[in-house]
Length: 227
Ligand SMILES: [Mn+2]
Image (tube, rainbow, N blue to C red; front, side, top):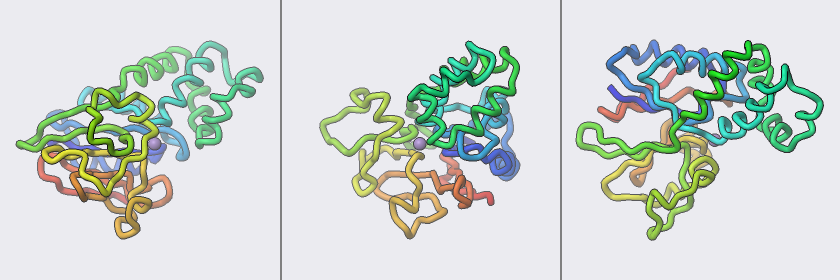
């Protein structure tokens, strides 16, 4: 089976419970649509687990993008230095809940730090797959709807910071699976649940704010939730 989940935000216990709930095995594939780190303190632990699983396919989110720049600087010096604390990227990361991730990253040995950097650098920006005759586009987020815009015209920043128009179907024969925007902010009726409307499948249920972690099986469109 092929599954998709997003915005784990350091909630490593929910990640573990999800893997148990879906009985994730070697023949399965799990897409993680970004924002693994920050807010909750288990982000680095989740990344280390993901790295050891070739059948987990990571797609980059804005939080990894932000973390990556700072992680590279931290890996070049023994810890967070005073000069680093004064940089815009570090301040932005801290304002985005990166303090717990920075702390866990600094506690790692240099070799593991480098492995994590290389791993994040390998994250895809988006993927397009067919499962059981259904087409899926998977990315952290999408830009505003523009009928003239092809997917290869979408910029990296739009794929990690964009604000999709969930009221508009972006395609007639493709499901657009995204995270980044909590479903309760799309439509309050979907608070804590996966949003499925207009060929959109929005899967960030707001787990880092206490809502369940939502996961969708792309073979069956079954929704799985763990508390
Ligand atoms: Mn995001």
